[in-house]
Amino acid sequence: MASLAPGIATAAPTAAPQPKPGPLASYEKQKPTWKRCAPDLPAAFQCAMLKVPMDYKRPAGKKLEIAVSRWKTSVKGKRQGVLLFNPGGPGGAGLDMPVFMKELMPKQLLDGYDLIGFDPRGVAASSPVACGLNESDAQWPRPYKAKTFAKDVAWAKGVADKCRKKQGEKLRYITTRNTARDMDILRIVLGEKKLNYVGYSYGTHLGAVYSQLFPAKTGRFVLDSAVDPKLTWRGMIQIWAEGTEPAFKRWAAWTAARDARYGLGSTEAQVTKAWWDLIAQADRKPIIVDGEPYNGDDIRNDLRATFFDVTAAADRVVELKKAAATPGRRASVTIPRQQERPSFRPMQTLDNVEASFWSVVCADNSAAWSRDTEQYRKDAVRDKARYPLYGDFTSNIKPCAFWDKSVEPAITINNRVPSLILQNEWDPATPYAAGVGMRKALKGSKLVSVKNGQGHGVYLFGGSTCADKLTTNYLLTGKLPAKDTTCTAPVPRSGKESAPADRLPNPLPQLPHRF
View (cartoon, rainbow, N blue to C red):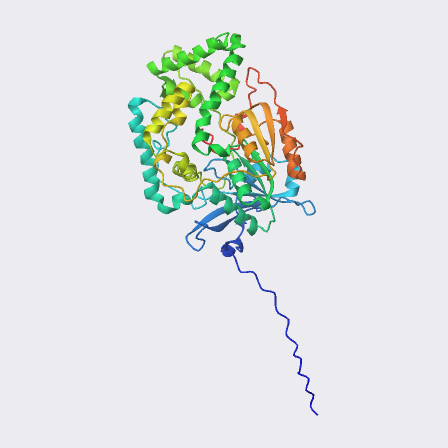
């Protein structure tokens, strides 16, 4: 008799459902074609191109190329990951930074990290933006004067119009937030769980934005010479004027104490008067500086940052005074250049430097830039009275007044992701107050202040052994100092032993209007 029990079929095991590929999957799965960067550089220094979406909200749309480089310096058994660099800007090219930094970094770090460089989107070899700007377009900041304000407005509108006509839609996507997203694509492509990073100047803002967007992927982050996130970007230009006043006061007192050497006066008031007398004299009859006539505004603009280096400022003011007093004498007050950086490609064009700078500064936060031209006039008049050394330059109109609206609202930096912030007391590009602002925004960070520190750039460039040791230890161990720390640099003396301003990491020293 047939059994009435039903047959029991054994079901095949069900495969676990595979996660659906994300919208960025095609970018994250890229396999870079690494090639020797240049025939005259070591084969270990390799370059590749990555694809990234122009607009991360439309990843299937237009693409940009990002140039990246690597130097695999890590030692088996000691490797801790990759260390990505950014030199500042916005608009600073960083593809060659592994070559440059390899010569400066301690061996323990080279044993632990592969060094990574890149040109941010829109810069140099990374889908560069170009607006057709000329040398006249690059002449800024501009001093406010009632009789020339209409020309300044025309200049600002002209720069914005040229960029809009030349670049169109692309211009709005050259932003810090998108560059941070590109950095995360690079992290994934390199196969790293976390990204380690050293960013100078503008690179501190880029690092802070990355930590805000990708907190779980943020490794050991060093933010050197910091931007205040609340001031991006009009406020960071305006803070140059605010920061210059105490630097000038310090310089005047320091120079007065050395009247026997400089002869500019034996009191702070006398030295201050000597400076403004020189400016007035140059306005009456321009002084020939490096073969070019300089009026008072030219001198104010060129020497503003120099006041943060007291010996350099005193030497230059003395030279100007001698040239003004001696018919036919030509002054030489050229700001020191950095040492030559190794490079394997043509230099950035002036057009790309300017176009990429304005792209980021204007597109990051259009709400910071008034569309009312009269507002700039009022601000310039107010700040010229408030900060007579430079206030009219920083608050005068800029191309961002005519830029297209940002594609995203300005990002708010407010997190507890650990990072190490480094700041010189006397930094001309990112004044000390900006570093304090970054520390407030990054609540999990620690601030290393360099008292008496002069110049822009601390780690490996500022001459502070204390700050260098703290930074190296953090990169080796991941342990931040227990609390905010102050290192002390030697008090500057008269002579030539000023801070090494010619060794800054910023690749654009000839263009002082950079972060």
